[in-house]
Each structure stands twice: as structure tokens, then as C-alpha cells.
Image (tube, rainbow, N blue to C red; front, side, top):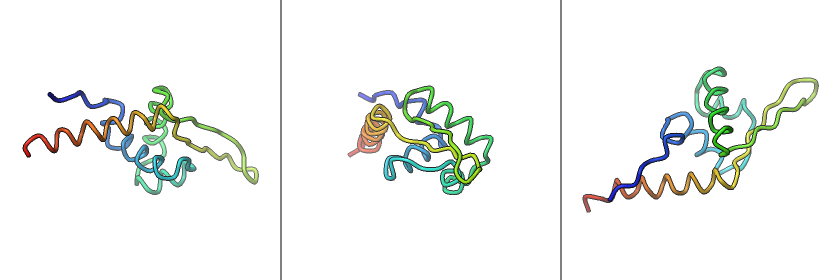
Length: 96
């Protein structure tokens, strides 16, 4: 009856990052850090896990001689997020 929830997305911080990226499509690391209220180190680790899963692409570049990291959601990431939300809704609606 219940489908498994994606363990990659079931982490609070990774889910927050994906939720932000689903609406803006791409965002700078500093934006994600500010919005999720996480540390740079923790966010870096979680972004790497999302990247390894193929859910986001990470572009590192320089802007005005400062390093800039941009995260972009992939089509696989959009599909995984939508499936996660659908499965979570099934859990929430089970008692109706």
C-alpha cells in the first residue's frame, strides 16, 4: 500500500534544498545556505549527495574574482521530487 520514500530526499536539509530549487530552478550556494539556515560544511555535504544522485548539477565559477557555486535542479531531480511528494501524500491521506 505504501511506497518507499526516497532516502536521498528524506533528509531535512536535502529536502529543503530541493524544495527551493524546484521553485527557482537554480540558486547560488549562499542563497541556499541563508534560506536553509545551515552551515557551509553541512550544506556542501548534502549538495554533494544530491549531485551524486543526479538530482542537481553544480557549477563552480568565479564572479568578480570570488568563487561562486550555482546549483541547478535536473529533470531527474524534478521527477524524484514530484514522486516523493506524491508518495508522502499517500501516507497523509491513508486515514481518510
